[in-house]
Length: 163
Image (tube, rainbow, N blue to C red; front, side):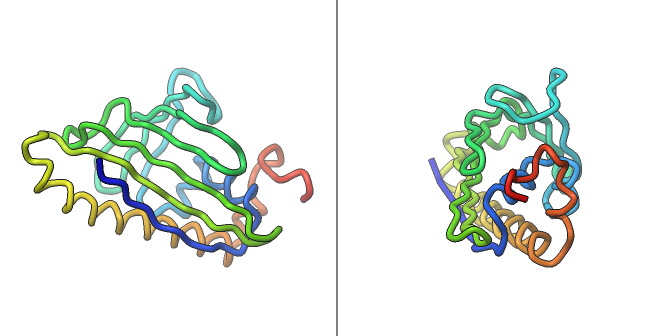
């Protein structure tokens, strides 16, 4: 199963970046990949077991389920239903505070291609596309956190208690 990841250091607190990564309204402002995101089954916030539906700007959509939620350090999802080219897909955000106002953010994907017989050919191409996606998403998060007022627009309940 291929695993790809990228890391960026961002001048912002880890708890703020974690909250921003999970705020679906604000995320649509900085995430260059996403067109639309919605909670499923009446959920209104992330929690282990909660399902979300996402549509990418390229038109592909996926329903995913939260499998890990450990604020402000880690969040992970796994695909429940999505593009047929993926036999399996999961993603994770990892936030490591380097100082009170600097965070190392790692974005990781794990996936396998379908059909399995073509996986040796498909997976390197898919990995290249997904790596570019991860790098652009991290760049969007970094640019927004460091150069806009987006962190100040987090809802009060999502803001760090020290703010």
